[in-house]
Length: 191
Image 1 (tube, rainbow, N blue to C red):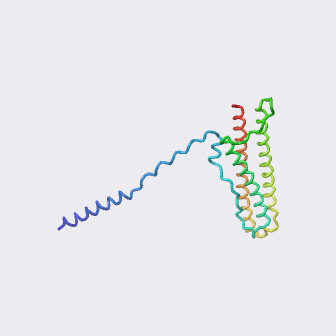
Image 2: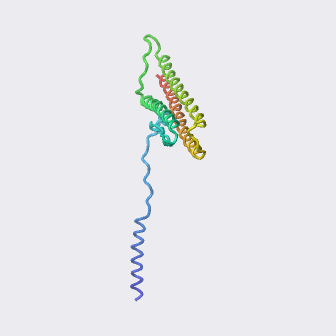
Image 3: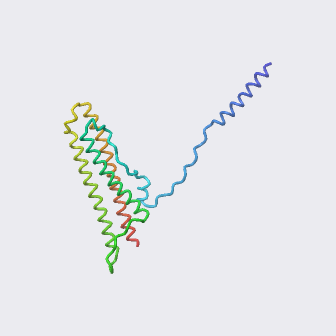
């Protein structure tokens, strides 16, 4: 009589053991190989944020003027970043238009000067926006619409975090401009 319950227990254990084996987690599949980035600009592009405006975390009704100024700065940062991002793609894939060189002269100095001028213009735009961003954060402390001290602290923190994100996006744009300058000058020298 004991053999039947023992046989049932062994059969149940074997069946449960099979279920447990079927449910055992499998190792994750190996990730698909991503082609290696060839240049620092390619690596930047692989890690870069896709252009998009950075949203303000503060509701417009809480501080209308400060939110409107943040949104205007965010649009300027996004517009500049988008241009640099798209230019970086064109430089990386070789589709960036090359300026015409004067006839009868070595074309390299003219092209290098154009590349350098484009870099300097991008950096001037970045620094102008950075200066306006700094002025914006400095004026937040004097915003008369933020009267409640608890609200003021919360809003200033949120604005500060948003401004930091805008500053980080400007840093990314500056890095891309530097890499485009370096690659562009290198490409011209190699020809």
